[in-house]
Image 1 (cartoon, rainbow, N blue to C red):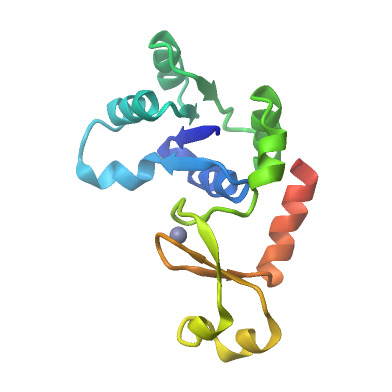
Image 2: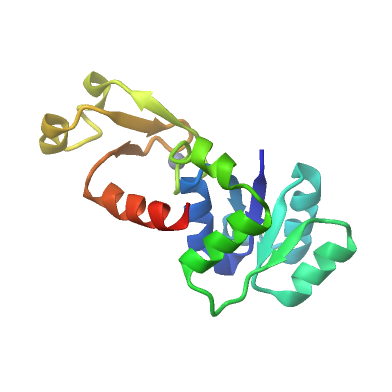
Length: 161
Ligand SMILES: [Zn+2]
């Protein structure tokens, strides 16, 4: 299982890696603790065996010197280019095919199938009326279904995978 940690500039990339099914922590989630963020990133990467993705060249080389796996993400690349590069360089396309859409893009939690009957207070009635398949995040409780937003996601996935 490939796991990532991304720097604060790559929040959007983190969401997409989660959509692809990868366990991905974002440094922005511990910014508030007023700590040395770079140090915390390196410590967590080491402890959890996470690959560091960063737009900070110095941080990437610092990680490499410590023996961590790190990839420098050029800031001028598009999201699709970055995703393709990551999947290709790390040879994890198959893993993404297997695990995509299993994680919450918002919080990295795991999505589990939900019963329609349990969602009456969580999803608008109009949505419940026309959809039958729902998933709920086991961490933040966000509910997902295959709606219009999903078609955009699917388009990106088909171009990347
Ligand atoms: Zn969640």
